[in-house]
Image 1 (cartoon, one colour):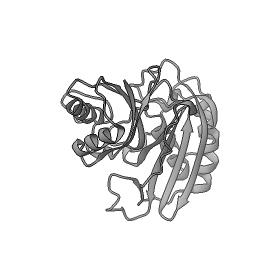
Image 2 (spheres, one colour; image 1 turned 180 degrees about the vertical axis):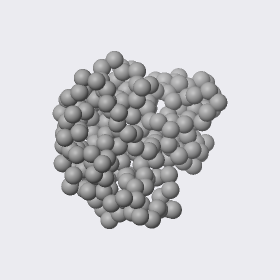
Image 3 (cartoon, helix red, strand yellow; image 1 turned 30 degrees about the vertical axis):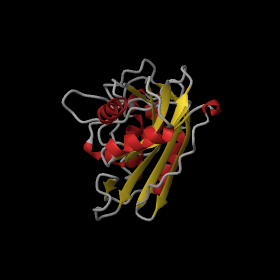
Image 4 (cartoon, helix red, strand yellow; image 1 turned 90 degrees about the horizontal axis):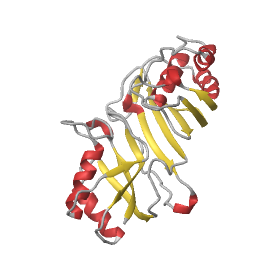
Length: 257
């Protein structure tokens, strides 16, 4: 049978989602636990790979097994063996044609900036600290330039393996909540480091190091332009959307500062 599983994790202690020889990863921990519970080798596939230090509130993975257990039993077993910084929220049987990555329609990320002269201790490794006062209005204006389908070639890392650099940004918003600046962004899919580079460019705008026209120049340039990459600590994969036919539970985040 094939199962879909929703997991939440704090990525501070991991070198990203994907298994890398000799390094800790979310995939490595999850496959180890699932294989131990099932008594057979289990491989997992995720809906959106996350980099070193990136967190997730609603990562979706799928795996296949011949072991039959009730959903509740799977969850209890998984969560009793996972490290404290990884937890499974729900599990569901899915059709054989379901794939966590290719069946997804949209992905939603959130980025937290702690914008204060004094750093935060309680939120260490959970946010990105920018001590210089950022201009929220400029950041919001600039963010709207990303909406729609664009060539995001300058907004991906040199390690990105995607054939096409075109992506469709469906929604983006920038807001302030006391000392926090929160950037929400949703797209059909993302290139490697795309969200962090978009945030990096908005920080440049908010710091008044660049003007808004700089964003238009980058998006329209035929050559790759250098764009700073924001730190990973402030980035969260909030959720991954799928067609309604799969009837996945709605996630209500218990994440607070």
